[in-house]
Length: 148
Image (cartoon, rainbow, N blue to C red):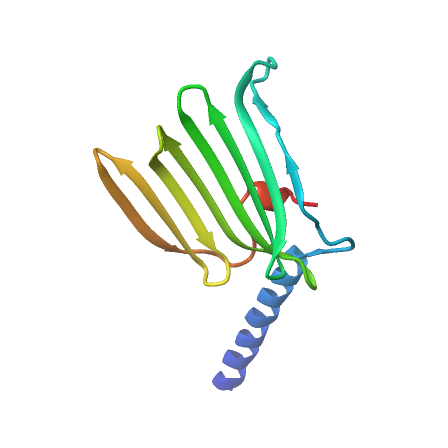
């Protein structure tokens, strides 16, 4: 009797995980193509804060998206995302980094295939890094989660 209950609970959990993963996927009706643009980053009043560059391309059956913002004070923010498009849009990797005068200040990464996330933060000339176990149910907010 105990074995049946454990097996039923296991099947229920497995089914719930499968349902959660399949619900978060987006059906791709038109695969993405290469794209390049130059968006500006503005504050709420329309004042330009940074010059941007948006790049998108398909390589090895993966959609790669990179957006970079360069500020006048020498700061650069860059976000990378890699997604699988077939049979549905699923974000596989995400990276965000901040540089100041060419030196890395902060970097955050997530590998959704392995479920591992990491952070590198330069504090007092030291790098801090920690690995985390991610909930594999979906992507982090960012450009990869805003793709069509």
